[in-house]
Image (cartoon, rainbow, N blue to C red; front, side, top):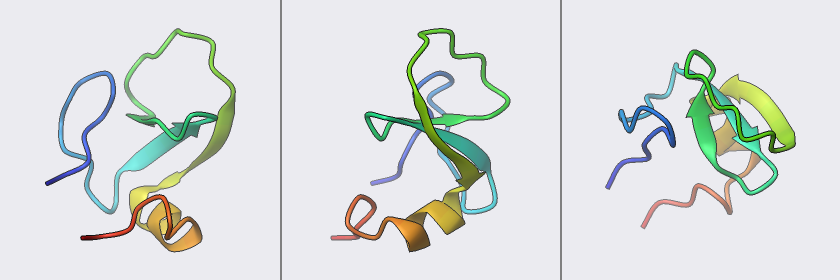
Length: 59
């Protein structure tokens, strides 16, 4: 099972630059997302997996 962008629904790859909001929802930086949610972080998907292992744990 892969993680997908909340806007474009494409699979998020390790080197993709993504935004994580306060609800831990991931969106590509290039995708327009105008809901006004508070951003937690902008980073590559790989770096977020390393920083937040409990959120992105693999089964």
